[in-house]
Image 1 (cartoon, rainbow, N blue to C red):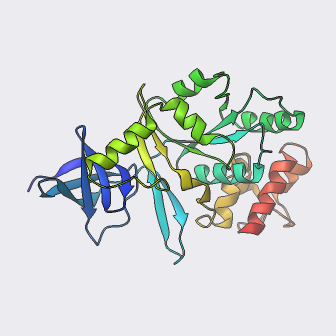
Image 2 (cartoon, one colour):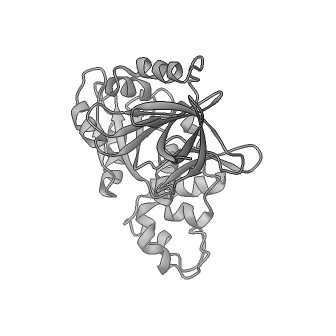
Length: 289
């Protein structure tokens, strides 16, 4: 029986759309397998003339999970290289959410970049101040406007030759960004559904699209809910990039970075070497966990 390698591009109600050589095959998975995620590379075989069976999930270089009700987490997308965290001049930026996304990336072997959308609107000073902090930490920042088109070329260049995903609070314009980058998105979504003879493609599921200039974009409308549930306290601290070189210098291994004696992180904040706002958000996220 021939085994083929394929790429999971969508979850459909009746199965999983796997792309192989420009063809899309609707596949079922073997029961014993873990949940297959969009972006997974898989081995599959034909079960009938136009139906396949996924036999194996190939090793992932990264995976994004979201907590589900029964405490088991579900993978949302796999093999992502970079998450582009989108925020905007308005609505007011939720920096707590931004820090949460970055903390997850630091712990999940995924690069992170920031996209500031709606730059055609006047930029508040305090936003500009916060942005310096992130750029200082080495996070790339793309300033774009889907309205004026400014900065879009640089962003498209950044998406080349890798697998990316947009994340961000609602109202920041993720879908207008996606549509600007993938002008024929609806057309393609319908092709996936038609090829696999399966009614309408559900919009909540993640879908992988090939970008015109190379690279892939995983579009996942429900992604805002991938949570902190997966991170321990130590991982959350590690998720703050500027804390990383200090964590070994704390007096206690299980330092809470709050009132513990000999905490190197708090000392650095008090000396003005680390952003007080980021530190306060870290404490807030820790409480939330």
